[in-house]
Image (cartoon, rainbow, N blue to C red; front, side, top):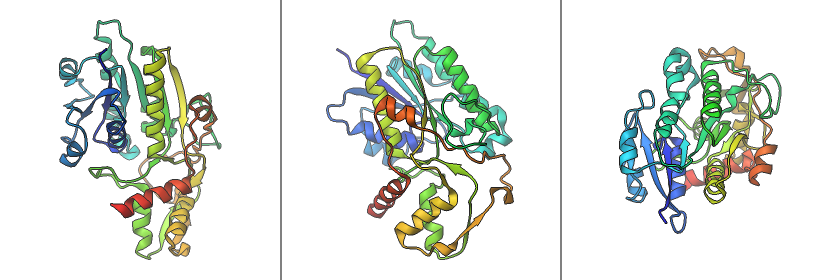
Length: 321
């Protein structure tokens, strides 16, 4: 019997690299894996760290160019994990057309519909907590989505598109994903590493005290994706899931910085709480998009680590590298 196929879209990004790394170390390599990239060629350290059997394909999500090569050389995937996005809210605000054309995965879905063999593909799609308005705490999946910025709107549009066009999907509304740096460092600054770096200098730093999220440890997100993949491949039952994916803790930026300072032994008086409204970021930001993750825990029997434990794991890994 031929192996099942998993395609990671956005394989050179932060979550994509962590996912590929985790898939590469599964004993017995139960499935064939391929990945797509867009803006940068796959970095050599990443290629070196992965099995040579993991091909990379250059794909443009706006136009769909590049998917033909995936069809030819890899074939129809059993699972597509879409980690690709234009995810900086300020950038999305300036270029709403790009945000919509990249974040709504119409090119992926259209490509999947081009296969004629009688095989179903599961679409695992990374969404965001920014689909919520941010006017209360611990949003549930069935709460109304009222995004306050273009990024959130593009992600709501993506969720609607997928749930209408795909017969099998798992939409993961992810909070801030944090954890160790990737094999090939990503260009964006990572939250815990950035906080660690600025606090280590001993200067006073301003952090928002009135914006709340449920940051989630990257390896927990990978575990969730693997669990969904394995369930789909082993059971093959129709799957139409929408899950909040966050950590168990509702924290402000001040509380995040305090956890880093406490674990590292930095002076917490360096942390200066300020209101989010005091800074113009060029984009509206929801105040409290903490999420209730009961459904995630009950559906997959996975309990993400606490924020503090995730920070400890992150800093321990950084110490090793």
